[in-house]
Image (cartoon, rainbow, N blue to C red; front, side, top):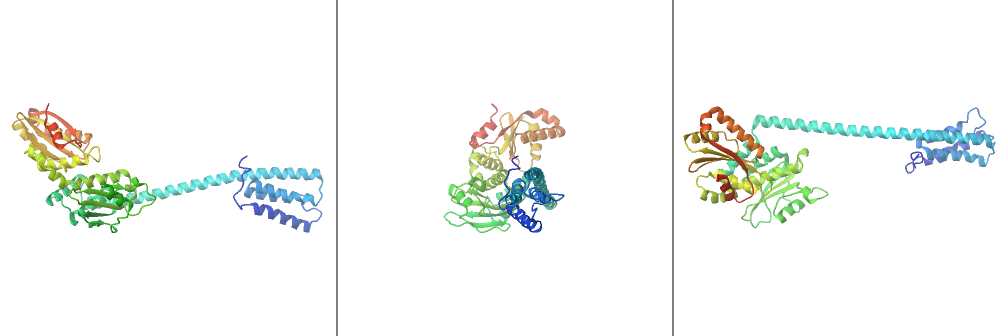
Length: 426
């Protein structure tokens, strides 16, 4: 019954409910003065008026129109018995019409809502299909012109950093921005360098229609104030000013590298995507510092490769940002010609970012394989792959030399302490 007594919206139906019966009464009184309600006619036509208004505007406007028609009783006498039966019939018919109108309106509202939901889903599906088509086109172009994986791309970028001794220039930064475009859907971004003592940064390169440096942007301001990377979601701002995220790296000599992202692909804007950009940005920016810091490791173990020491320092620094940055797979072999053959063959199975260190001890040979950005499952998979290949090509040497195999997670513990643990067989 709540639907029957519900008030219609403001200015909806009340004007018609008052004017129409009043005008009809004036018209019938002018045409038939002795019977303005037409109750003495073969059919009481005026009861259709509350019926139509109730069908249109539900119960209350229909009841008001019936009340206005009934006001004719005040200035024109009708037999009470006949009037009461007509009034009761009119009220009952108004109730039935209002109930039907309410039911129909509910169905119509539900149908309209369902249609809107369907149209929204169709639009979303069309947008998803469009994005999928664009992604497939880009994937096809990438496979056609640059058939590379994330590991091989990082390996190439690391080699170029090695050639430049860890310094960034415009050509290298362009490649880095393209890498972030392919990796995380970055559409508009700029790479800036803050030299020591400068108030404005120098723009090394940009991707898309990157704007000039905006130091008043809340994300950029917070990043510079706190000396660490910031993203828009952490600041709880109501609207985007310029930057979705600002990734900052302190070079240690007063200089800073900034990656300012202004736009990304719609489906790439999420916490994991921003975190992925932060991890690889810090990994690449840490290369120069890690190369300098690796001298401590090289001074203790002279047979340690420079790439192994540098990558380990990089990953150890990244471990302060993310909990799992890489693993070290360790093989222990019995010293001898068989161990030399096995280790040389394992090194030939190297993947893009993997770095090996063959360490000689008195009676054993240790092979350490550093696997950047690999978890425990990846380490177990790599171990199974190596052992399968070794048993296939040189099973006799493997059975003769192999003693043990295990792996360790790279963490933020002091590098020398980690290496001592890896080299210790106790």
